[in-house]
Length: 450
Image (cartoon, rainbow, N blue to C red):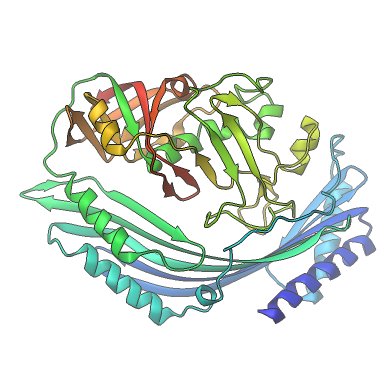
C-alpha cells in the first residue's frame, strides 16, 4: 500500500510539471486506482467470481480562460508528456469560458474515520465465495423463494488529486456491498422482485440479517389484493425515497441547475419549501457513509451541510466552478463517474432527520393507505416541475392496521407540492445506497391501479 501511494502521488506531481512545460497556466490531475472482487448469483446459482483492477489519470489545464481535458488508463510516467500535450492542444483550440475561476486552493481536511479497512482491502476470493454461499443458503431456506440476482462486492480505491495552486492529497477507501433480488412463487402466484442492499466501509455487512429480511419481505408479497383508485396517505421507505428524490429534489438542489434557472428553488434560500417535519442534510463525513471521504474529486474537503431545515431551504450543493459562478464556495460535492470524466455536482450521503414515531405507529395511524418500498420509472420524472408517474413495487395496502400486498399500482403527482404534505416521519433510519432516511408519510398522493 505504501508503494502504491508513492506511485500515484509522484505520478501526479510529474503530470503537473508536464502540463506547465507544455504551456498550461494552471493544471489539475486526478488519479484513481481500483481493485474489485465481486461474486454474482443468478437464478439460485453462483455464476461468477471476478477480481478486476482498473485505473486512470485525467488532466485538466487552463490557458487563460481556455480549458482542455485529456485522460488515459496508462499509469506510467512515459505517457504523461502525451497526456499534457493533448490537454494543452485542446485548451488552445477551445473558446474562452469567461466565468472560469481557476482550480481550488489548498484545503484543510476534516478528520474522517472508518473509510479504509486493511482487513477488507486484503480480503480474498475464497472468503467472498464462502460468504456468497452463506447468503444463497440463507435466502433459499424457503423453497418458494428464488434469488433472481444478487452477490457481494468488495472495493478498494486509491485517489490522488493535485493542482498547481498547491492543493494535493491522496486517500485510500474501502467498501463492501451485499445485495439480493428475490421473488416467491406459490400455487401459480409469483411476487414482484424484491431488492435489498446493505453496505459497510470496514467489513462485509451481515449476511444473516439481509437474507432474513429478503425472505420475510418477499413472502409478504404473496396473495395480493385489489386497491381502488384514489388519493391516499402513502408511506415510503428508503428505497422508494432514494429513487424519487434522486431524479427530482436532489437535482433541484444542485448549484449548476440553480444558476442555469433549471431549479424551482432559484432565489428561494430561506423560503419554506417543505413541511416543517423535513430536515435534509448532505454529509460527506458521515460514519460508514458509502460516499464518505476526506475530499471530493476536485480535492475539496468533504463537509456536512444542512440543505433543508424544518422545511426551510438553507443552501445548495456546489463544485468549485458553479460555486464561484453563484458567488460562494464549493460545498465539496464535485464527483466524477470515472477518471475520464470531468467533475460534476452530486450529493454525497443524504440524511433525513428522524421523527418520533415508530413504524408500527405509522401503520396504525394510517387507516387506509399505501406502503411503498420500491419504485420503477423514477428516472423519467421531471426535475424542474417535480412531476412523476411511477410504478410502486413492491407495495402494500394499509387497511385498519393490516398490511396486504398489491400489484400493478402506480403513484403520480408533483413532489415539490407533496413535500408540504409530509405529516409523519419515522424514528428508525434505514440506509439505501447514499440515502439514510426513516419512513416518510405523505398525507395525500394519487394512486392508480393498472
